[in-house]
Length: 111
Ligand SMILES: [Zn+2]
Picture 1 (cartoon, rainbow, N blue to C red):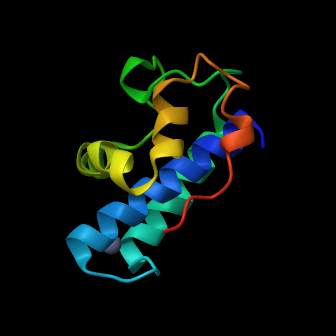
Picture 2 (picture 1 turned 90 degrees about the vertical axis):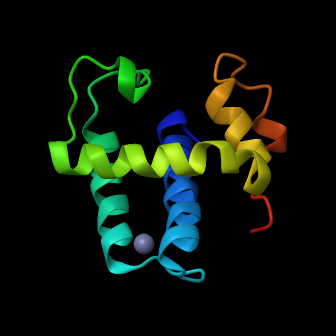
Picture 3 (picture 1 turned 120 degrees about the horizontal axis):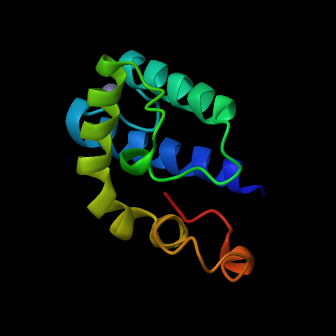
């Protein structure tokens, strides 16, 4: 899995956690969150950096103000919870420097 794909997976997980927690959905995202996820994936795909910087350190700020606010809420909510829901993904997100090391453990964690 490429780094970019892993980014997308993390975003998907975080939006999933956020949606379940805030919109009381189950498994499927509500329409707003699904839209946000599609948007986030598009932004990721369009990111010109080989190694995407953390969004808050990024110089481009490619999200529109509305979406930025939405995704920030998602990250604030889901960030800490990632450790509970998807420790491997969270680890991969936080400790990105140790690339490769986590690959063997990269299988999907149970939802
Ligand atoms: Zn939602």
